[in-house]
Each structure stands twice: as C-alpha cells, then as structure tokens.
Length: 236
Image 1: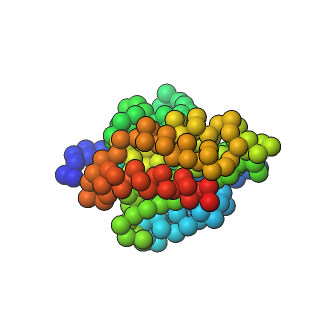
Image 2: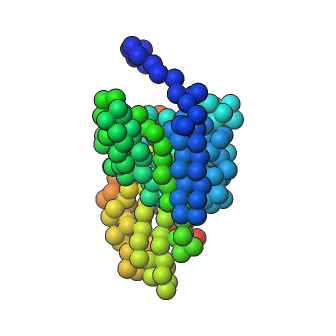
C-alpha cells in the first residue's frame, strides 16, 4: 500500500506478549502469540474452530502471523474477529498510561478504524470459556478453500436453557465495513424455542442487520444469501 511507517517496533521477541494462559473460565492470548502457538487452545473451543484455523492462510504465515495482529489490523474480512466476538472476547490495550479492556465487538469502529489510542498496543485477548449450555459454530466461505481470506465468515453462539434461547451472539465478517454482531437476528431468537420458526425469523432479520457490498470476492446478494444459509446450517 506504499504506507509511510516511520517507526516500527518489533514485538516478536517480547516473552510476555507470547504467553498463553488457559484456566477453567477463560483463555488469555498474548498480543504477539502466533496462530501456531495459539492453535490448540483456540481449536479446543469447537471442531468448527479447528477447521477455520486449518484454513487460516497457510502454515508458514500461521507460524509468523499473530492473533493480536489479526485483530489490530481491523480488516472486515479477517478470519479471527467473528468467532472471537461470538465467544464474547475482550481485547486488552496497553500504553505507558496503563491498560484498559475493551469488548472486541466495540474495538472495531469503522472501516480500518479501531478504538486504539496513540501509543496503545494490543497486549492480549481475553476469551471466556464456553459453558456446556452454549452452542457454538463458525463457518468460512471463500473463493479458494485454502489460503484465502473470507468472502463471508459467520460465527454463532446460543445459550439455551430448558429448550429456550436465553442469549444469542451472532457475528459476521465480510458483511460490512467492520466485523460486527447481528443484533436484530439475535433479538429474533432470544426467548424462543430453537426450532424452524425461530430460525426463519432470524434469517429474515439478518437482511436488516447488514448492507453488504459487491467486490471482487462476492456480490452483495451472494453475501446476503449465504449469511442466511450459514445460520440455517448452524441450526441443522
């Protein structure tokens, strides 16, 4: 992009930023931890997450590319944000003034604009562990199966108690200028039994959540259609 980068600080040798801490209730991933280093911890959330990670660029790039860098870059079609948003992840930003924690979904403000103040860097990501009553899946669609960025990436997390959906977190990449949640589709699900009628209402609501664009990767109509169908796939 011919960007002027007058100051570059390489964080790859900062041991603290490579730390991965896994407890019973949360997973912390340091900002400089590579996708290879974090692979097992992230894949443990669900087999669909493992499938996504195996298609995340190439092995060589996963050996160098970082989880924090994928977040900080802020691409609307990055593979990392949708599943992490659906899981309720937070990002810890640090500067000489101290640290602050931001909901990952709030970190993305607009296309290529993130809530990161001058001097702040991504210290770590904090991801809550998934309770047993939370259904979670993530699906990626791309022009090439391997080594390609998403055309659409959808992640779904439903909290179900006594057959009723009590909470829903749905996040898509490739559907807007930022990765973000489908709040109207979520509201269409909460309070309902997880059945055909609930899914159909949520699929219709997705049309009001996003206004996707047409570009080299996919048309707007393709994105709208496949987003609905990924929700149906999750139900099936």
